[in-house]
Image (cartoon, rainbow, N blue to C red; front, side, top):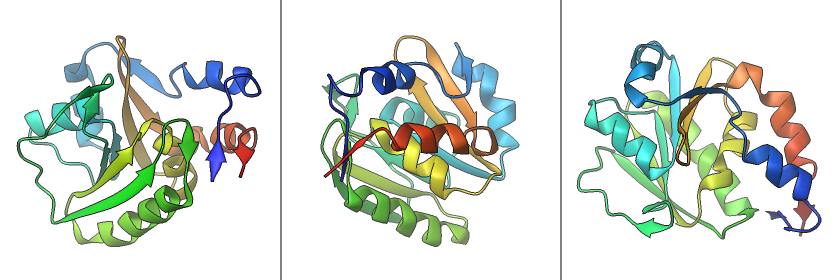
Length: 169
């Protein structure tokens, strides 16, 4: 398991609070680029909701049933497979890594695969970047700012550098 410590990882935490890709203040402004993606991963409930509202379904959607720390229940999840992972806040567990890997293997079937995280999914962006192909686009919400659209090919080294600062347990 990898863990962030508020004191030891201050620099990493401040880097994670900045968008890792292009920030779209309005979801609608990103739709054309989203539609053109070869492989799409969404992280976060609000992002997943926005996609499904426009009948866009990611290859992999990672949710924790919380939006800005408030309970959220998806009325309809259009997914053949719903996978489960445990991941406490401020960590990236082996279970989350393995579940993301499993979803990537399953995702070649053209269906949306959802990973429902018991805990928090915020840091799932990092293993997704490291495990996905360079053509992948990852979407996640930047709280109170908008949608981040991240091209994996632009972020692998940066993500690895961030991961290397985490505390290994």
